Image 1 (cartoon, one colour):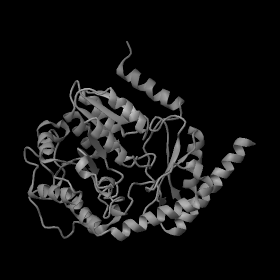
Image 2: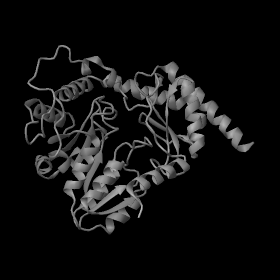
Image 3: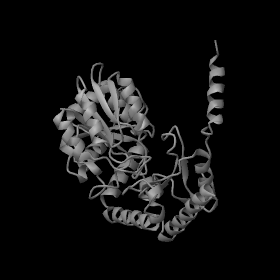
Image 4: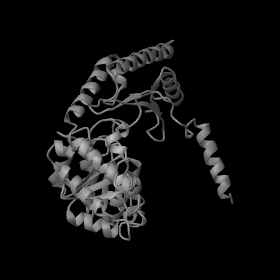
Length: 380
């Protein structure tokens, strides 16, 4: 029998042979077109400076929220978040991953059914796996495929989708999904990680922009993208939040966030409430980028979000193009299988409000040249 060490070595070697081995690296100081910091909040000193903060009894959580980690500031922040997103209540988790796992692991049991979009985030898939519910994936944003799965679903039925997909940048047809959920008495769960701060009058998310917050059972909002902080929250009814406090293992058995994180998240929400013009400016820059890349638009997944996915479809080719772009001063990242389906390897470009028009123009010119050169090489 192989030892665990032998298994690990073999798995690593297999990844290397497939040219998909991951390793950590420190990002160089290049012009950022890679991070999820869409509104520039990670670099906002008014959010992250604690020089003049009043001293508190302790910085660290000191225990789980059910032991010593709960504070007045925690509870007031949850109320503030719920009001902003037009939800009845909210519950903060330490990460977006934990929020998805903690929600899905708790609400579904054996005999229930979860139907989810095939491109849902890994945390959603892992939460479903831990729930022991029957699970069916439907083709990405395919309403007929969703309805087909709902017709055979049994027990309590949940439908899970992202509002904006992290690797494709496209949006889910939420209005149509709501109708199908109503038809089959299914509860809709929406991950708004990449919609928060981008959609809605003040960045409340796509669910609020569409006015369907009363038709969604639960939403997951993360603080690590447009809000520039860390952590996440589940939005839902008071009953749901009470249920999660009692049955969500990732919530119950983890140390509370440090006091500084709670302060930063609170400040980020205050900043977001005053960022209508900044959100509009971001969308203008997204439109500008799209206008400059019309010649290669067939290679870019249609998206109105900051995430613009340039499909290359070949591992080594994707790596080489991304490397050449970085060498010209622009930080972009290649996304390879198994993170995305094989054959859809891509360069994931994120537009930010702090990117200047000249930077966007330069990047677009590089992309146009790279893709034109690539086509010439392929057909030579």
